[in-house]
Amino acid sequence: MPRPIAIMGVCAPERRAYAERAAAATRRPLHTLRHTDLRSAHTLPHPRTRTGSDIAIVDMGTDADLIHGLTTQGGAQVEAVCIVDARHMIGDLLDDAPLAASVRPGDTRGDVGARARQAALAIELATRVVWINWETVPTAALSVQMALASHLNPTAVVRLSRDPVDDLRSPAQHDGELLERAGWVRALNDEHDPFMRDNRVATVRYEQVRPFHPARLSTALDRLDDGAAGRLVRSAGFCRLASRPGILAKWEHIGSAMWIEPLGTDDGRMGLGQELVFTGLDMSIPRLSHTLDAAALTDDELSAGPSAWLTFDDPLPAWPAVESSIPDATD
View 1 (cartoon, rainbow, N blue to C red):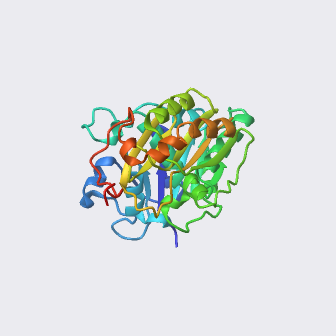
View 2 (view 1 turned 30 degrees about the horizontal axis):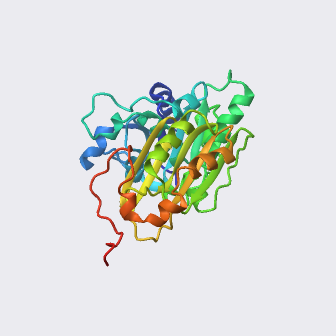
View 3 (view 1 turned 120 degrees about the horizontal axis):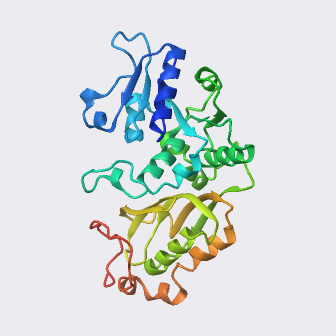
């Protein structure tokens, strides 16, 4: 049975043009899914037309909630095609711009680096990553781009586009959950095996059993952003801050933008300390590890315990109140 096809990517004109070509070539209807469409179930385009005879191609708007949008169209069964422009693919992943301007406070589309985060997410959710405007880009640069995308999503088919029919012809993987396609998830699960490789592109799993000292972590992040360990493009995983004991946090970074946000109380089932995955260009893994290790608690700090950790200088953005699972010292 033919699958619904979702076209993703942050380059709106190029994505839309590709979606139109794909719809014409496959003789399918074309729908557009915008951020506002996902706010009401009554406005969601259905994969099929009203007659139910054809399965639609859906142009996922630049600021659409990609996870929600793909889920409404069929989840992992959707043919999720990420369109990247070879002329500025890496620039999109390093872009500090918000995804949308003039949004209300708390709307993450207005975050610094939100456009880069959307670009990375589109690659990580894709069944296929397709390059357009690649003909004038040097072969070495294309090799780096394709390897980078393959590291970000080892399950995706990667190809240089010639026409949409050819792009969709080779079989793609539709097993598992949408979020399990991301390279960082696969690396944490010891399943990271990118199809495309390049000597300049690397992915490394970093583990540290000790919590981070928040002030030293802030310094470490500044050093890494300045290139102390190469050009870090993407990192994600789980972390713990000593000054916020008993709370498991999600670590997410793309380009120069960074989010460390609480997931909830930490009952120890997610392991200890830090479990992070880094993907980048020309990375020095020893310098990366050294910089992060310097931010972890020392022997004396660790033995001082949570009551002392609460007194640490903590310049990182505040979190909403989260109940701690650390037992009271008097228990």
